[in-house]
Structure formats: structure tokens, C-alpha cells
Amino acid sequence: MTLTIPFDNSYARLPGAFYARQKPEPVGAPKLVAFNDDLARLMGIAPGEVEEMAQTFAGNAIPDGAQPLSQLYSGHQFGHYNPQLGDGRAVLLGETVGTDGIRRDIQLKGSGRTPFSRQGDGRAWLGPVLREYVISEAMHALGIPTTRALAAVETGEVVLREAPMPGAVLTRVAQSHLRVGTFQVFAARGDLASLKALTDYAISRHYPDAQGSMGLLKCVRDAQASLIAQWMSVGFIHGVMNTDNCSIAGETIDYGPCAFMDSYHPNTVYSSIDRMGRYAYANQPDIAVWNVAQLATALIQQMEDKQAAVEEATEIVHAMPDLLQEHWLTRFRAKIGLATAEEGDLQLISDLLTRMAQNQADFTNTFRALGSETARDQFTDPAAYDVWAETWQARTARETDPHATMHTANPAFIPRNHRVEQMIQAAVQGDYTPFQRLSAVLTAPYDDQPDYTDLTRPPADSEIVRATFCGT
Ligand code: AMP
Ligand code: MG
Image (tube, rainbow, N blue to C red; front, top):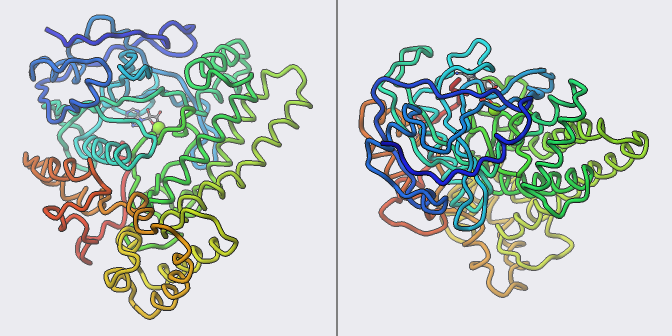
């Protein structure tokens, strides 16, 4: 028996140049370790028997109507163009249109080798699968556009990383898996027919009101500007903002070495492979602009009048930093309780951030507690907070309800690195209690949940996670 999934597969109807037909490789002893009931219902999938779901989300049983394929794309990795990437360890089963009318991809990640695997084994281990499950669902609950997690399965097989690790498959759900790199591959190859077909497809799937390829560029720019401002507002560091990890739909995608900051510093980097700090916290807005510029370069290839296209695309991309700044300011105003705008607000926010960086203040806890004793306790020198708070109070006196504004802008709970690591360690030992606890609290990150106060605590020195890994 396989699960009944109401597939309607638009990507599989595109020309063959876009993908390779590829079935997932079966695994030895699949065991369902997580299933997202709410998301399943939204997608029109009725949960089945546990064994049936384990077989389906491991890739052992292909549900009726699925048309499994691996997608082709390329991309700039750390600024260098790689002419062929593609789904090296993932298979798109197909799409469903949810009860909310939204079309979503269902993809198995860690499902075995594909024609795009290069040196890789096509597999994933349990750690990154649970990381992505927890963090992507937390992002969703925080209100930030993201791919989501439908299921996680242990494969019963071992994958070799630095050490033998338990294998796992994540079922990822996305509004699509179109990336900037999906456009780049056809542009770089000079395959203009495919580039044109892809442009039409992206417009009709994501931005039906967009006018032509420059209209699409504008929509992606706007979606990315809004997204990155939201990342900044919760201290999220993606870690691998390569163009193949930049979603056309504007969702956070490819949770590799991503992390939430504990103590605030703009130069924070966790990813072990980001040696130059290209993707450091404060660089994310600039990198997003760079990525959108790569999309512009790709889209231009199909335009008749190149000169005019270059001018239009340049104007679109050049407007992005200001857009980002506007989104950023709106988000950070809310974080300090401002629903109205005044001239000096940017200065006020920047001053707080500078003091936080100088005093190793915890990003999440400081904002959550602004105005209370707990906030000043975050600063190595609490007087640094007091000086700022005086100016801040004079400003918030002109606001109607600053605390209400702050409450919905400043989460109490984030998936802290040390908790994520502890959750993985436990799961590898067969204990899923920390995974369940973390998942539960993060469904309502803006609520005070007194039973979970321990999960608001920053890491002790011995718990600090200094580096995160791609998990590939
Ligand atoms: P990522 O860093 O996860 O965005 O992956 C970059 C590229 O490497 C993509 O083309 C992936 O499909 C590929 N890749 C990552 N891990 C593996 C793996 N274990 N086996 C095969 N390909 C992989
Ligand atoms: Mg990727």
C-alpha cells in the first residue's frame, strides 16, 4: 500500500531539458520519525498507516500519480560559477494544489544518487535532516517564508560521513524548487528556448501579474528583499547564500549550516566552509542583491534589445538596497516597539545594535525583554543599556502600545544551536524527546511558554556551537 496523494505535476510537463527522470533508491528498513499532520492536511494528503508513510517518504513505494525526477540547475558557489549542480541527492515526486489553492512541490531529500550527484552518495544523515525539519518549521511559525518539512524517515542504513551515521530522508515541501541557478544554467548554455519556457513557467506559477522577464525580476527582487529583512530581524544566518540556494518564490531554502545568533555581532559566521565570512550575518543584504543581479544577467540573455534590457535590469537591481533598507527599518522599528516612523529611528536602532555588539548581548533575549531588568542583564556593562533606554523611552512615549508592537516582532523562542545539536545527539541515540520538545515550543515562538523557559537560555560556555556543517 502507498499513500494517496492528489498529484498534479506541472514541472514534469516541461521539456526534458529541465530534469532527469529519476526514481528514489529504496532503503533497507525505513522508520517514520516525524510527520507534519497540519501541513499534510493543507496539501490535501490524508495521513495513512505509519508503515505506509514510512515506505512512501523513504522512497521505497512510489505513490500513484508521482512522476519522480531530479531537477537541473547550476549556480554561483561562493562567487564562482559552477556550470552544473542539480539535485544530487533529491527527487521531486510531484506537486499538489492545497486546500488554500497553493501549489507545492513534494521532494525527497537524501533519496539516493541521481545523474547530478557528481562525487556524492546521494544520501543524507539524520543530523541535517532533523536540523532542517526543526529549523524550517520554526521559520514558518515565525512567519518567515520558507520551504517546509512534511516527514522525516530513518532509512535503517548507515551513511559514511566523518564517521558512520544513521541515514535519513527528509520530505521537503516548497512553493517550488526554482532557483536563480535554474535560470543560470540555460542562460550559460545559450539555450534560449528553455530559458524562455522557464521564465513563462515561473511567472505563471508564482507571479501571474508580472509583465515579462523584467516583471519577473522585479517580483523576485521584492520577495528577496522582504525575506532577507525578515532573516535579519530574527538573527538568522543562512550560511550558504549561493545562487542555487536562492529561491525564485522568495522562500528560505536549503538549510545547511544555517544558524540563529546567540550573542549579537554583525560579523557572525557559523558555517565551517565560509572561511572568508562571505555569508556573515551583516553581509546577507548585499549578497541578496548580488544574487538578484545574477538572475538579471541570466534573464537578459533572452531579450531582443539587449541595450534596453541591460538598462532596465540595472535600474531594477539598483533599487534593491533601498528596498531592503526600508523593509529592514520597518522590522527593526517594530522590534523596539515603534509602529510609527520618525527621523531619528534608524539612529536609535543602530545605537542599540552597536551597544549589543560591544556587550555580547543575546540577540533574541535582549529584544524580547526591552524595557525590563532582564534586558539590561544581557549587557556585560548594563550601564550601556541604561543610556540607550533613556533615549528609547522618550521615543516610545509617543507610541500607542509599544509592548504590543514588540511582542509580535520579538520571538521568545528560536532554535538555538546548542539545543539543535543536543536534539541531534539524542536522536542518534534513539531518544526523540528533545526533538519533540523543540518542535512543540517552536510552533508558537512569540508566546511565553513557562514550561519551556530552559529553551530561552543562551548556551553556557561549554555548550557554544562555534561551527556548523553542510551535512553533505
Ligand atoms: P547544497 O550545499 O546542499 O546546496 O548542495 C550543493 C550541491 O551539491 C547540490 O547540487 C546538491 O544536490 C549536491 N549534493 C549535496 N550533498 C550531496 C550528496 N550527499 N550526494 C550527492 N550530491 C550532493
Ligand atoms: Mg543547494
